[in-house]
Amino acid sequence: MNAPFKLRPYQQDAVDATLKHFRKSDESAVIVLPTGAGKSLVIAELARLARRKILVLTHVKELVEQNHAKYESYGLVGGVFSAGLNRKDNHHQVTFASVQSAAANLEQFKDEYSLIIIDECHRVSGEETSQYHKIIEQLREQNKGLKVLGLTATPYRLGMGWIYRYHYRGFVRSEEDKPFVHCINELSLIYMISKGYLTKPELIDAAVAQYDFSALTQNRFGEYAEKEVNQLLNKHQRVTRAIIEQVMELAVKRQAVMIFAATVDHAKEITSYLPAEQTALITGATEQRERDQLIQRFKQRQLKYLVNVSVLTTGFDAPHVDFIAILRPTQSVSLYQQIVGRGLRLDEGKKDCLVIDYAGNNVNLYHPEVGDKKPNSDSEPVQVLCPRCGFANIYWGKTDGKGHVIEHYGRRCQGLLGMDEDDEPMPPFEQCDYRFRFKECPHCSAENDIAARNCHECKKAMIDPDDKLKDALKLKDAMVIRCAGITLNANASKLKITYHSEDGEELSESFDFSKPAQRSIFNKLFGRRLANSQAPQEFSTLEEVLAVQTLLTAPDFVIARKQKHYWQVQERIFDYQGHYRKANEI
Image (tube, rainbow, N blue to C red; front, side):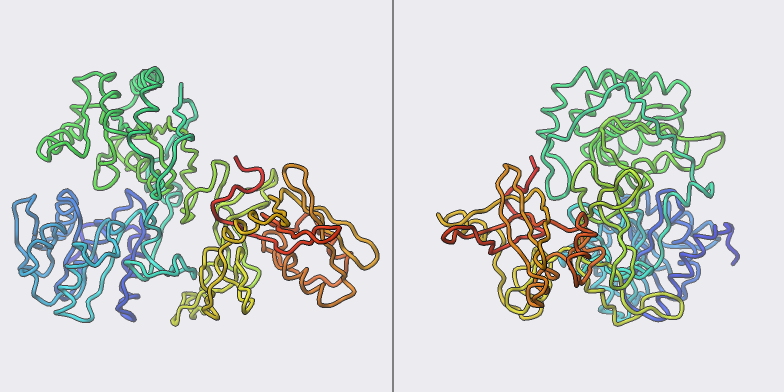
């Protein structure tokens, strides 16, 4: 049967990439499409093309219903297995199910399925006790060659990391096992907007007031403790009132407003300042029936303001939303894009979507997801070329006024070695082993990740830098400085390096370039790390070193031992990551 919808080119690309991948591999795969890209159409087309039984899973009944409706719009009939929709039918070739209902009724899924499609697949964890894992293992018992495909707008989550290992453009996202193996297709938000597939966001910096969450401590998920956030917000109730007054003023010419609050108490306060007859509040505690009614009234334009706390970032579709007010902190580019994405769907008469960030998140909507927590507020995604394989890595870093990278926080090159004739990675998947930041093994000199406890080559234990510092600080004849910078002086064949602490203390040592052994040590320490390891160099002469001395990387700590009349440098600790404060850090 012919499709009633003509797929957009990028949707067809996603379908083609899926067919191509699963023709040659049974390894799990992910498709990454921004919010509003029409994942349900991609799912419907894949289901239409299927010749054997497939199961489409998602976590909320709204998406089960939406995906099923798109499939049946082809004139085909599919089953729905969802307690929330009061249906448990899995006898058709294609079944659309909620993960909760399927996991609770595993005995009803004993047929042979060829494919599982998981919508919003960033919710899949690597834990064997998860509902997704139980369903996949149940179906694998019937078909060892079961294929698993995930679709999401957010393949990276703070605290969890990337949900896949290898990217089809030839780079590695994770060295550890992940729920999915490959990302086979990805589309950027900026592409969707520039091509007119999504509404243009009007990002304005006109906040009448802003919250400052910078003093709060983030947990490992990059989020803030609710109690601390509430304490901060309680001190700034005037700020909240001023913000909402501005939101209402700007909303006069807008159709629908979504407000993202930081906590439940914060959301209640916000709601109290809005006109009651035009406002709905939805939190995780809102009962399902009430939630459904409120969302329906909002979609039917009976309500203008929808205030929520972390519950409407996925699986929510109201195309007429044209004003997004962000009053919650986040360091996740993906989550920020999802929030803004609630207002970017196309709708008749809609020209743009106003977006105001009142939380000072300092997130660039068009930046790529880096894959690590933002190290500090003035960091931005920077491109760093690997000097070994040439791969263009994206890391957090800093640039000068001309856009040149002056610092970055990358560790290991993410490039994949070995590409096929279509310029796609081919097995065996081998990651480039060049490291921008590393810890050298004292036993075999192999370069290891800065957090490694055992050498990946000789497997021997490596002394933790914190232990080195702790032991040195206990000694009366040892001196430890936090190195804030270095200066160089040349005299004949000798190069003197002086290490300066932030308190004015100094330690120094010399390298005699006429002696190959000393020249080799200098190159290992400083030549290898030139320009943050972006341009390693084997120096032969002092003149070569002095010509690029501003690009030499200073160690974070220097340890020296007292000799009769001078201090002898014994240890230089680079790329430090631990409990001690580094120079010029607060």
